[in-house]
Length: 95
Image (cartoon, rainbow, N blue to C red; front, side):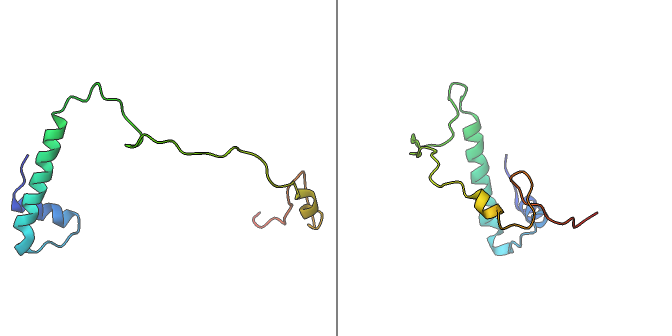
């Protein structure tokens, strides 16, 4: 696939990008190079390649999920005007 200057101008217009005439030729060449590279990549046989989540074979060191704080919810709710079953009750705002 190859683009010409008119098509690149139209793409720039649709993308709401301002492209000056002086740089249109180089932008067209750059876009054509990118499209040629994509064509080359699409010709590769990738059926036997397993997809990977990250290019580097690393795992994160995760800490154990351990409770480090004491439960203080009863002391916090003791000063609240109204509470339900482990939650705060507030006045209705929208009826």
